[in-house]
Length: 456
Image 1: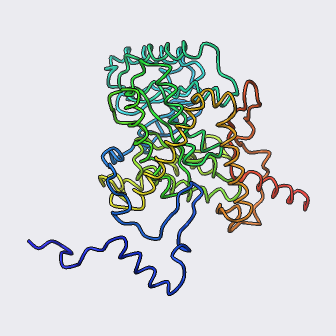
Image 2: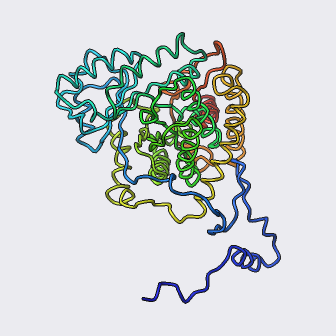
Image 3: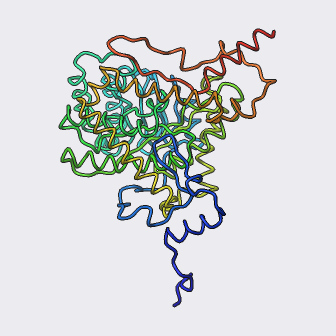
């Protein structure tokens, strides 16, 4: 049987580049090379020769993902409504341990992922395990995660809690019977929300993971989940999730741990969320969800497009869930084994990001590791510098944020004092500089509000 395209001669990368040069008619080939902020030069053409001898086996390991919905101080009615409307995973925040049975009444949590964010992890875990036994469920089958990350909590607060590692080991022992449950969720999305570059996000996540593996030798990689941010740099974000798996494999090897598949959670960016023209956040959310899905995230949580304007808004939450539902049921993204396979461009980005992140990770390790670099504000300073450059680029127009510095709606008015923004919860320095969330459009929005007030 004659193979398709057999009659065509294969072209080398040089052949394609020569054709580009000929079409330029004297213009420089270098003029087409894009110098990107991640210290990666983007060429106009990519070919299989662009990524010679690169291992692809660990980059993508599954197609489908769980649709996670965050509920703050949830009740049973909200939980059931979300599950009946497409959610397959729950992230319950500020839930009372004593009311756990009531909130999860008629919820078959043995068939979904049930995750928690709490200030009292020991008490909540005890009640959750008691509820599992009360319902006579197999503890080994319960899936979900405890969003417990004492290192990130310390970085966010500007000080680490006393007896951190003793408390950490206590949590690991308590959750040990839930063999399918994630006892550690590294909150890596906080880096991107504070303004870190993709390379920094990958490197600092790797350094933080290394700290846990070094300080807690008994920690089982099977019980680790990494929660990554996802922003609007579409192809780079796809590559980021693929690069993370390369770094994960390298770290497990370095610590003589048996390789296990990494569980990755994606959370849409607060960094690029805007107060003005909030419906443009839907566009950003869709791009971010696609990047995470194609990149291979296991669980995807999309913030409501109007999260800055409303708390627990049913319409906003439904729109967030529907993005994943449309990508699954209409675009069939979850039916393809590896949607970005064969894209030499994405493969090139994947390996460049992993190489750059590994280099930065090694620099952090050489300076004493993640903890030492946090205590001396090295990591915070690197993120701050990158965030400030992003904001400069936004003000100059080099970076575009739809509805903020491009296609703005001048007729729109918002009282920014009446909305909920991350800036209202920022911490001040204690033992070291805390990591705070800074929305990219924040300063431009404040300037716009000031002008509007002066024209009243």
